[in-house]
Image 1 (tube, rainbow, N blue to C red):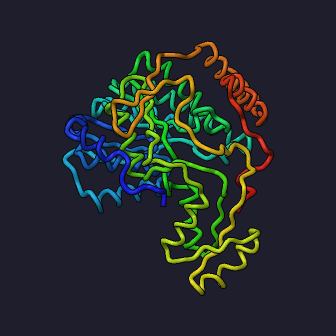
Image 2: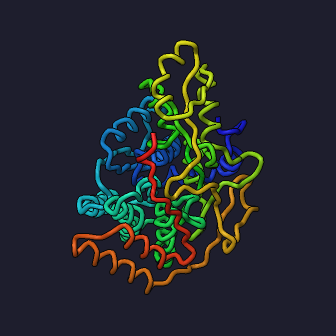
Image 3: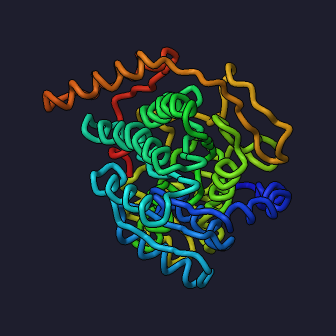
Length: 394
């Protein structure tokens, strides 16, 4: 469905398996946001290599239950301690948890943070935007500090390909997060990864395809938006390699070659339906697609509505690094690495925090106000504003 014939990082994982397994077997891990698609993939990679401690924190109690059931049903049991905690990593409860674990088990050797607001649609209103700032920027910075105080050897967090020349607030928030990573890297080893859309990840358009089929609803997708895709397992492997093998300040990303191609959502929708035994039938309107489900399913066909994207923040294509970033393409077969110096403007970061504090203290803020602040933080931020949002689409 995503236009490839085999796993992307298979050789790099095999080449580093002995060292990775040794590190994991001797170490204590905390995975924040560990019940999401990327976090749970990291947890599975870690668990099967028998870590001394694997603790998982996530705000979603239901997803955490599924993670445990999945690991027990597929991997069974290990020798180390495996435990889950339904905690908000931005809360005072989490701060108390970190202090208690430092006392009880001696802290964590590696902290993986995959918690994020990841949707472009999250920029539609000022309140979700403020939560995005909390989750993607301030919570990351706070958990980095907690990891350092707990004696961690390494902190990893997920960035995004949308942080390279961002056109939406989600990508820009991750770019600002990378500035905070750079500042923390002076006192703690940090690394991150920019990677493609994770196919069928929770809440994604492809995930939605499964839900639409279950509910007997038509498929809808943009025909002109192209994306790179990795599988959930590949996402976990890329994060694992960056977290355990990356040097301080490294940003890992998939190499662009014949094995990783830009694919449109509409082409995936067609392949998806064909894989289920349906012939896609393109409809002219959303209403036509809704009305024809029963009729078309009866003859092994399925309605689809494809459209040209016109919503805010949608980038036509994806990229992993900018012209100013020089990647190392030699260390791994299928992974490139952006090698960064410690580059950040402390005055700018402190001014950013002050402005956000002022907004929250007065109890009101506007979307425009936040966008203007992001433009100050990222001078080349090319925010794509159309006045339309994904909540207005099927």
